[in-house]
Image (cartoon, rainbow, N blue to C red):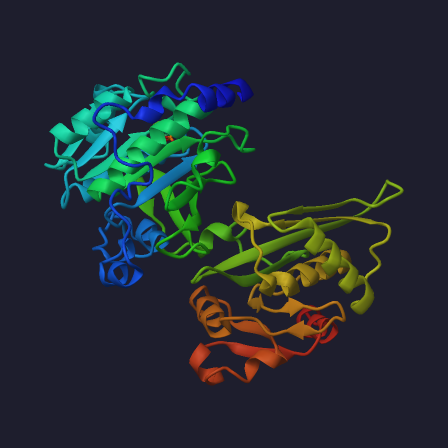
Length: 438
Ligand code: TYD
Ligand code: MG
């Protein structure tokens, strides 16, 4: 790989530009422009947003796709990238002429998939091709107003000696496509495979070039797919999009809370606690499960799934001190349902009390939603968007919520949130309210 990069630096025949692909690399061809004049011009983010047919994808993009926007969609093989973008392109094709280029599948295969998904669009064109020059020529000929490249790792620049998927090929093909997209105002989707541990470098090296980077993943085997924007020049990056893969392809999952709960049963079980997390603007009911067992190791084990282990260690220390839990001879395992990975500190309280519940073998009633950040001194800190969280808790059927006293002041009125609010200042009083008498 190092050799390829070196070769690219010294030989660089493609820097002359591929015939017919000679726009400047960032697509900003033209003379220097005064700032004042430039500011009067419409900018990329001002354009008309095109809906993709998926409300989850549109929300993640900040309202839809913009002309000239270059979007990298990366994810492990088989996760549903081709399916997502074929469906989106069919929908976008009702407004613009889209060219879907597959370097992985024959046109018949793509057609077969489109047929199975019952997609139809007058203005979506399918092409099976890996040669960049030919792709650009076809895009021109078809007067494409939008382009999908599936996947960037299969495309090759004919003037480059390196093989498709190599660093040089991936980068140079992406440059040429990006230049075309920017110059012509075409939305461009680049699909790329990454392995679970991110071992494949391809998509990574494109991140700085594109406007938007989307990662598609499912943490667990199952139908739910999670789409995250890790970079977005024209929209938010903290949102997640949720999709379900079914026989008819992917569909939006706007109401997702049920996916992040362990089982459907509402029987109280020691070690389980619920909370309401916020991902971007979306409230999600999440469940934490903890297991504490007598250790056989000199150094007790601590494991966390879905939450940062270091944070769990701090919360365990706070619980030992302020709830007087005896954890020094216990292995402790903490897990978040549904394969989510959360950073929201509002679930701290649920983590601490699920451990307390596991250790004491006293279940937490299923009517409780526990919301609060836990400080080192055992105090409960207020959390953002409390009202949104409580509304979601009510909607999901919780009847009581434990919230930090500090947060309650800002609430519009208890009646408005629709469930009984119990305030606590600190971990100890929270544990007393929830774990006693259950
Ligand atoms: P695909 O979009 O080909 O994944 P990627 O492009 O990320 O490699 O999706 C592949 C998987 O999705 C495959 O295992 C079959 C499954 N699938 C369905 O379950 N339902 C469907 O309607 C379609 C089209 C695919
Ligand atoms: Mg694919």
